[in-house]
Image 1: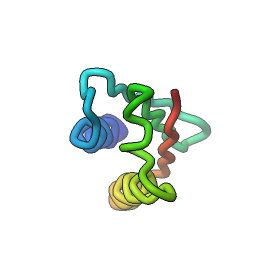
Image 2: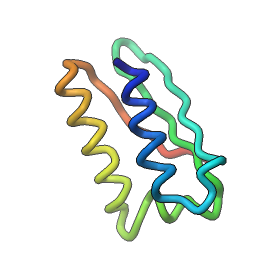
Image 3: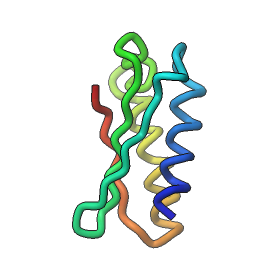
Image 4: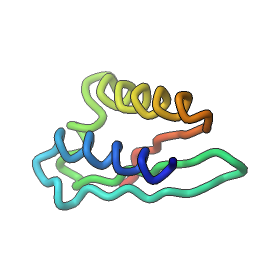
Length: 80
């Protein structure tokens, strides 16, 4: 289940950035909560965060909706 969320996050991020080859998602499990760490090229950070964090919020909403459907807890963190 977590692997599907990881793939979903990668697909979403790669569609937004100029350097899709630099998109990576690291998945961790923290007491039953799946943490997905999204990393993109430094110049693409603004593209995945968006003005006032709107794009990041939308990404988190999509992942959260998938997680709820699968009855798991997930968090998306955008890291450098």
